[in-house]
Image (cartoon, rainbow, N blue to C red; front, side, top):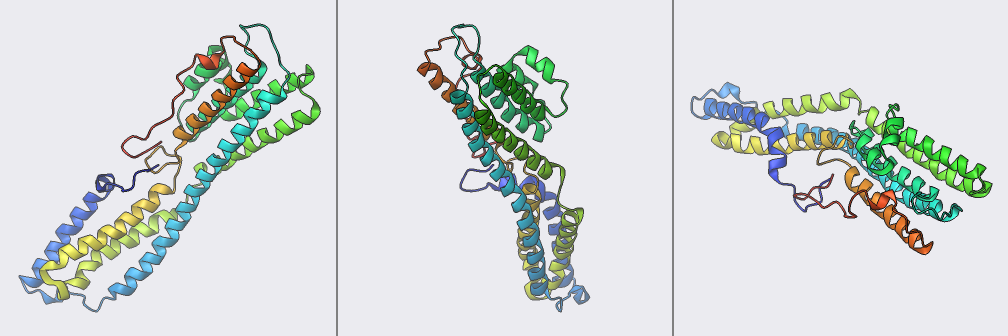
Length: 317
């Protein structure tokens, strides 16, 4: 996600320069043919440039709104995941009666929180089609990584493991039915968030929304110098390229944000958000450990330093 005040042209230019170069050559050819070689037939002065531009703007605005709606829904879902994660961690840490004097055994409350931290990283990797097994090894260990490697949908497998651990806690008397129901409700919320993210990921905008705008923008850009050359003459290439760049940039922008889980600079910043969830939950674990005077060597104290993700060149991922 872009967090800087201005978007540098170098981020747009690589995607647009070839199209603009071809258009510039065509614009110069049209201007030279009309103004230098006096081929007056090349002019289409009657072409309704303004109405065509207005119609194309409306069409692009409709597509951009649809693309932005997908991007914003993805960001809302991850915002909901942040809130649900904090609430779920509080429930794990305060509702489970799992006291132990064994300083070498991680309490069940911490095990559940570590599973949830792993879930957030696994969901990020799942949506970006990356492997999450390194994150599983970091937080849950090598054995858990081997057990979970059989799942094609790793986040769903982690939710199942959390449910199994909660059932075990309930059977052992560490959790009563009312608390179990409250925690289970938040596990259902996690499943719903994952399903909504997968819906966005696996259901792109209709193909006509992707194909038609590009065809119409290209057609408009090719016709534009023919409609301007009689009035602007040799200045036609400058005006035509500037106007064309506006429409090409709008088309590219809407195409980029329509897929918010592709690990680009326009993405939902899932790396930053999952890391923020991890930091919040690890701090909560350490606070509860201090309150309950548990001084064992827990996994979460050995994984990696507690530090936030910093923007790189004005972008967070």
